[in-house]
Length: 232
Image (cartoon, rainbow, N blue to C red; front, side, top):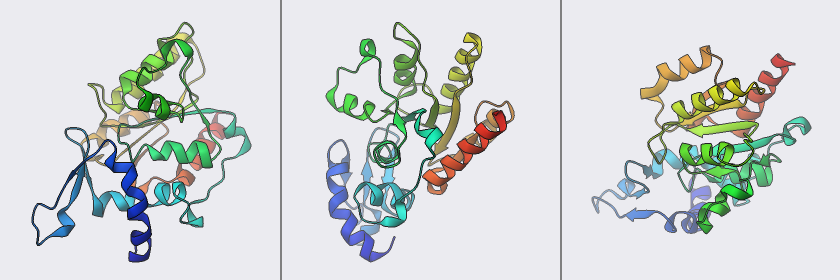
């Protein structure tokens, strides 16, 4: 990201990460580039890597760039969208896709709403922090009601990985005889899961899997449209 964008973006980004993230100051005063933001155990947000991955959602959310604009076709707007993502900042992807992009956020049923105000606010935008919570809101109510489109991170809060989560959703829908949910995965650390991602594709469980730095709304929309056209 260029210096001009960074100077404008960083001050506006601060409120997003200071609430819920622990800031680790520079490990070495002579190397300011080593400053990182830590979230949950095992998760780390490094400026150099994640700012590149987050350029489009953050600039769009903060209104800094017209380049981040995108269009969701009308028939996709009618489908509910769920993002399973535990990162506060990466979760802004869901806000951009629903608030600015036109996707319909998948919202919890009344009997499974969150007791945590912060989590409920995220869930109102279709963003869920764990696979377990996503399964609860879709299948724990009086009437099971899955989202139409689900994008899930792989490494999440809780015991269940995104790879197991998408398989679980697929199996539940298949057993119920309902139409398949459109399932996709993304990750900032896909390396250890490449073989499993490929198996999920070959089995017809997911239609796409990306490194977060390669993920954009346009890629998601084109992938979903192609999958829907093939089923028509």
